Image 1 (cartoon, one colour):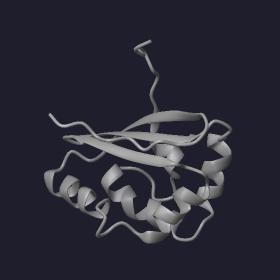
Image 2: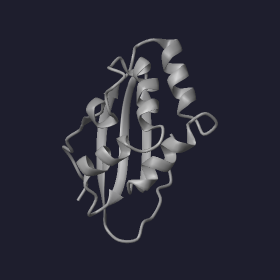
Image 3: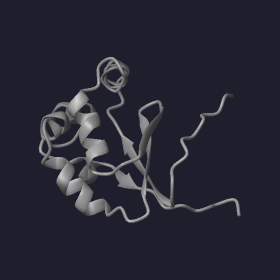
Image 4: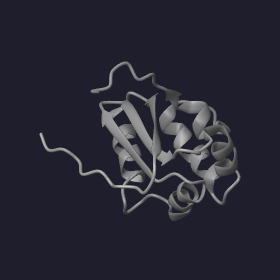
Length: 124
């Protein structure tokens, strides 16, 4: 198994880890993966994520289960950033578009779908 090289950031950061289960349908999962690829993801979505202060975001998949890891500056305020993100260009349209894969309301914001995970172990 290969690992993933991590970016280095100036100053302290904090990490958020969230979970989402998408529709258990092979075709929908393949299409969801496609829309998250570099070729198909909407530029405005990436711009909005960066604009609210997120430094790095990764989504990992196993079957229809997703884990999202978000790194942000130490002073980052999640609720404030998600509220702002939802008002930026094409964000609401994106959330409505991906809702068909996520099995949720088209009006649901990202932070209403993704469930926070609790860290239970850290190598000290």
